[in-house]
Length: 407
Image 1 (cartoon, rainbow, N blue to C red):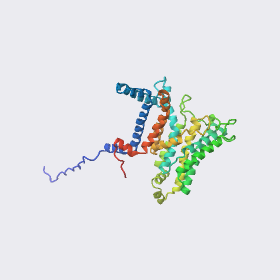
Image 2 (tube, rainbow, N blue to C red; image 1 turned 60 degrees about the vertical axis):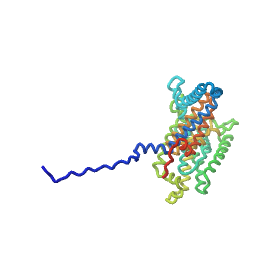
Image 3 (cartoon, rainbow, N blue to C red; image 1 turned 45 degrees about the vertical axis):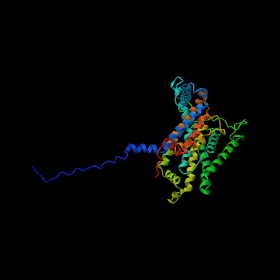
Image 4 (cartoon, rainbow, N blue to C red; image 1 turned 90 degrees about the vertical axis):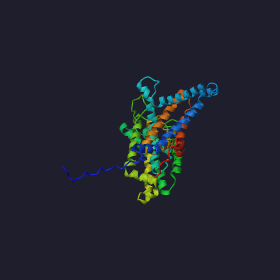
C-alpha cells in the first residue's frame, strides 16, 4: 500500500572534537594542576631530602663510600639498608609494630600517632580558619598556654563531680584561648594593628603571665614547691582514655574530629563562614557589600583562639596531666602553622596533615631509638615541607607540572 508520508530524516549527532578531553581527563587534569598535588609532592620532596640526610648520618654508608670504586655493591647495599631500616622503624613507631607479640601491642603505635595528632589538628584548625579570613594567627603558643593554665586552674582549684568538673575545665580553657586571640582581632578591627605583630607579642605576654602564676603560691604553683609547676591534674578532669589503660589515646582525639566537622560546616554551609571567606578574599569588596569587616575579624579570631585553646586543653587534661608548666605547648602552636599550610586551610586537609605530622612525631622517636638516627631529621623534614609548600612554582618545575589555571 502506498502512502504519501515520508519518514523523518535521521538527526545526525554532532561529531566529537578529538581534541576535547573526556570527563576522566578533566578530573585528572584538575588533580595534577591543583594545590593538593603540590602539597603531596612537597611531602615527597621533603622525604627524599630527608633520606639523603639519613645517608649522611649512617656510619656504614660513610665507610663503604670510602672504597666505592673497588666494590660499589657494598655502598649501594649500605644505602638500601639504611633507607629501608630507617623508614621501617618510622612505620613501626607510627602505624604498626611487627616486632612485638599480640594485636594490642602492634597497634599501639597507631594510637600514639592519633594522640599526637589531636592537638595538631585542633591548633591547625585555629590557624587555618584565621587564614581563610585573611588573618595570620601566629599566637598559637600564647593561646595554648593561657588555655592550659585556665583549664589547670579549674582542675586543681575546684572540687567538683566528674560530670561537671571536666566540661567546666574544657570550657574554661577554650574561653581563655578565645579571649587571648580576640585581643588581636579587636585591635585589628579598631586600629588596624597587624595581627602578626600583635599575636607574636601576645605569645611573650602569655608566657610570662603563666610563668608568674606558676611561680606564685596561691595562684597555680603547687603548695610547697619552688619550681614553676602546678599540682597534677585530679582524676575528675582528666580526659578519659578511649581504649583502656594500656593505650594513651584519650577523648581529645574525638574532640578534634568533632572540631573538624564543625569547622567544615561553618566554612561551607553557614552564613558566618561565607562572611569569613568573603573578607578573606577581598575585605574592601566585602565591606562594600554590607559585611561588617571589623566584627568579622573579631569573631574569627575568637573562634580560632577557642580552637587553639582546645589544643592546650588537650595537652594539660589528656597528655601532660602531671601539671601545668610553661613548656606544656610542646611547640604545637608553631607546628600548627605548618599543618594549616599543608592542609591548605581546609578542615579535611588539616585533618590529613595533622595525622601525617602526628605519625612523624610518633615514628621519629622510634627511628632514633632503633636506628640511632637523630630525631632532628624529622624536624628537618617538617621544615622542608613548609619550604616546598611556600614555593609551588619550584615544585611544579621539578615535576614538570602544568601551571595552575587562573580564573
